[in-house]
View 1 (cartoon, rainbow, N blue to C red):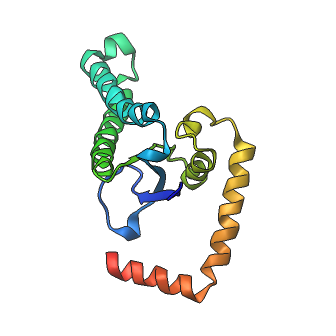
View 2 (cartoon, rainbow, N blue to C red):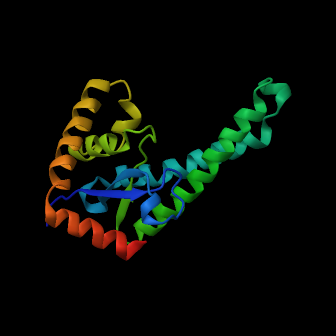
Length: 167
């Protein structure tokens, strides 16, 4: 019982890949650890962004958006595909009464995820990208813990077992 942290390791575009190529972390909560309206907002925001991007891609063109439309459309298309894959992930998590939040794939995803979990705020990463000092503090703490744990023979054995199991 009680609140626990779940840190999901995945690919930055949420596609299924071998464990050795996973490069992104996102925070995950049990539904009962969040208010129902927060759970609903997390699930709906993905679908709303998908609908918005689809609309922009259908109505946009170089004439209305300028010379950079092709590049912009490509970026929006990539984001759309990533969101679709994230929606599938959210659906899988929902079957287990879990819900995830997206965090930036900027090299600080672990720090963003830990910040979201520590504060209990799934929307922190989106709202607090200006808090570089706080993010760096979490990043440093994660690095210290990882360095410490990586020297422990038991953790090394667990890591090697997982790599053998999943790859």
